[in-house]
Length: 174
Image (tube, rainbow, N blue to C red; front, side, top):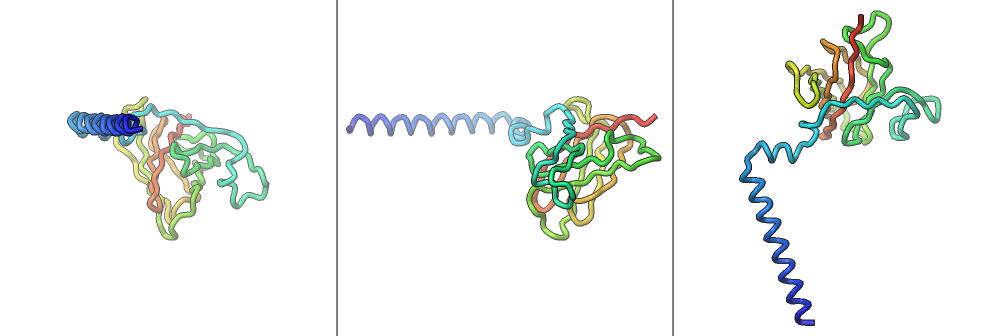
């Protein structure tokens, strides 16, 4: 029994030592590696994933149908949904309909907390041009989001102390 406890202490100490060496090595590699490790969505390729189907149960409030169907995209963190009233989203916007997006937070927000949007056009994992800022007063809800050019856009969303990211495609309107 004494040998078992002794081996257990040695293994625990060895595991702690390996963890400390690993963290020290990561820190020595510099802030760029630490930043990438802490925010994987920054280096990921822009990949819009729009589903046309029944909305998730938590995103159905306000609909008369118990199982409403429409185009939507979920945030990478699962904290927000973009319900697309326009599909596809167009740049420049259509004369016949707006690029309307209904933002739905999975958890209730803080009243009066705006939804802040930073939209960045991407080519794979590389940003193109300057980001575009938009704001939805009062938090997630209906908005018209027109963007200056077609392409894959990464939306970084902040509201009520929460953050999430959604990639959406805007198609050239000819």
